[in-house]
Picture 1 (cartoon, each protein chain N blue to C red):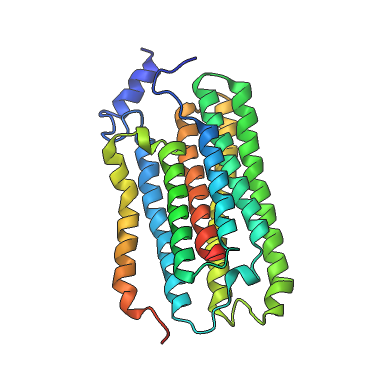
Picture 2 (spheres, rainbow over the protein chains, first blue to last red):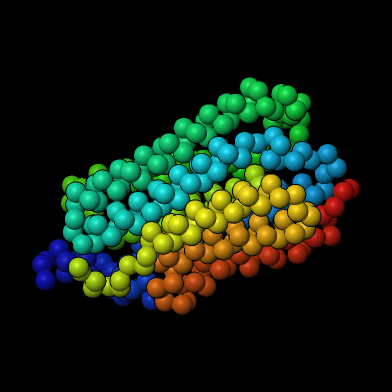
Length: 202
Length: 92
């Protein structure tokens, strides 16, 4: 055992009971549980407001389902490339790791581009046609708050994944960090699956 | 093939299931089903998809069972949240 490894063990005297391979993983799961409550509160609040309203528009009539179905597809694909990146680095295949990690980041960035397009179109065309705006109807308010909060998570994920790609590539971080970043990224995908159903389809 | 920790689940298989379920979800909205039926189907499918992502992509299926307790806490709390707010739901 090298001195560095010995020092590392001195810093972490006991192994995490739930995630024996790392404390970081347990920390990320705890963070995600809290983050899930943030989204849960927003989605439940959306439901309460919607079913208490007498003039809530049919979401699929206002929002573009085809585009967001494509965005859902993109996030699912980027989740697959993320697990492929993890599998690659676990078997020591750095070129494959770089390729799949870059594809994951590209998927997230493309998602953000499509969301920016969607928002622009809604704000400039669709919402005015339906006489809706962020400030005059809770339909628009809750929509932008919820999808915006999720979009911020994707933005954070793209930055996070880029840092992981750089540091793992330079050898400072290992597969464990990729796994932890993966947990965050899949969570963002999972939340979008729920948002797609609750905000767009229902 | 190095499989020191655990063998990888069939990621591509999960991907295809998620894709098909998404297409089914969008398809359901065009069927003109009664509101309750459509709502139940869509919520069921969404939870199914979310569970697949958590179990396989986030490896929850292969983690110690107690870790799932952490993941389940927010869902339990959200159910409580809905139950506590039920009296306030409905047109004012």
